[in-house]
Image (cartoon, rainbow, N blue to C red; front, side, top):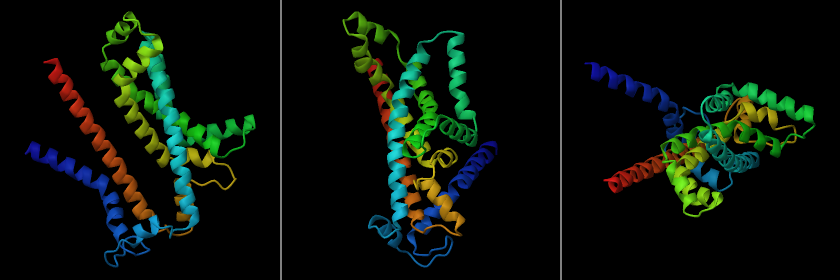
Length: 268
């Protein structure tokens, strides 16, 4: 009975979490403009999304969101990986302090981060726009990359790097040929997480986007919802984003499991 109730609770929790996404996915295959009104199976919304039938502002918002997310995720991955290596090489209280400082931005509410960056940009006199949004996304995404890379560093045999140096490799060669391949799965996970967080963010973006007409997907959806409804093409777009992230995560997990099995086989 305990096992039954435990499994029932787990499935109930998963149903609650994924039911809204499932509803959006189901109603992305109908032409109804109002969510919840089924007018028959149709792929017209997907066709409209990919053939330019949607409003130009939505296409522009999607393009801006992808560019910002890719650039911010790439910069965050580089900075976060370097920071993780530095934190890993610290000892004692210094490592504890740096880990705590890295965790604070993640625990800090997004709206506080957004307001703080807004006041910083205004006080410094930086014109808000594309650059400030990317910078803001890098700031709040980097700690998550550090959190993804650190476990890989802790699992790695630290003697491998020292052995590379003893065999004549320069520090940079040891980093590129030994260290980075070891932490590569963590870097990939950090990049995907930073990319997802950047696409998802609204609170930080709305405070740093400025008044120059720049729109991201989150700000477009917010403005669209305030008008009294949502553009129907947002349903297939949301479904595609969810499926893409799901496929990436499954692929990474499968590759990680295969790599671990290969290491165990070689170890035996």
